[in-house]
Length: 203
Ligand SMILES: N[C@@H](CCC(=O)N[C@@H](CS)C(=O)NCC(=O)O)C(=O)O
Image 1 (cartoon, rainbow, N blue to C red):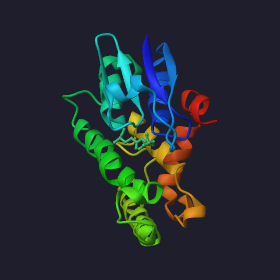
Image 2 (image 1 turned 180 degrees about the vertical axis):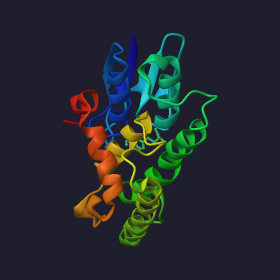
Image 3 (image 1 turned 120 degrees about the vertical axis):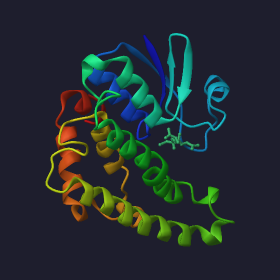
Image 4 (image 1 turned 135 degrees about the vertical axis):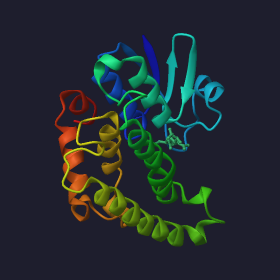
C-alpha cells in the first residue's frame, strides 16, 4: 500500500497515473500547491513543500521522475520502463529527467515568477521568458518524437505519462504556446491519454 501526497493539477497526477498503470493500492493525502499552508507531515518529508511525495513500505521520497523510475522498477510486470540492461534505458532516463529539470522548470517560471525574479515588476518579463523556453523545449521534444507514437523507442513507457501531464500545464491565459505547435508531442500525449489508467486520473 502506497500513500501519495497529492493535489489536483500538480505533478502528483503523473505519479497517480503510474500507480494506476501498476494497479497498486494507494491512498491520497491531500496537499495544496497554492499559498495555503502545507500539511506538516508533508513538510517533514519534503521541506520544499511540493508534491508528489510518495510514502512506501520502509521509506518516502519526492521528485516526480525519480518516483516514476522507482515505481516502474519495483513493478516490472507493468512494463512501464525499459530494464537496466535495455539500450532504451538511457533515452528513457534522459527524457524523464529532461522533463523534470528543464521542462518543468520552464513552467515554474510562469507559475511561480516570484521565485525567479526580484519582485512583481519583473513578473511579466519572467513569464515572457517562460513562454519562450516552453516553445523551445517542447519543440525539441517534438523533434525527438518525429513520426513515432511514443517518446522512447516507439513503445509506451511511463515517460509518455509525463508528456501527457505536462501538456495539460500549458495555459493560454499566460501566453503559453498550445500543443498544436507540437503535433508529434500532441499525438504522444493523446495516445497516453487514451490509456484507461491515465484517463482515470486526467479524465
Ligand atoms: N522537482 C519537483 C517539483 C514538483 C512541483 O513543482 N510540484 C508543484 C506542483 S506541480 C508544487 O508542489 N508546487 C507547490 C510549490 O512549489 O510550493 C518534482 O519534479 O517532483
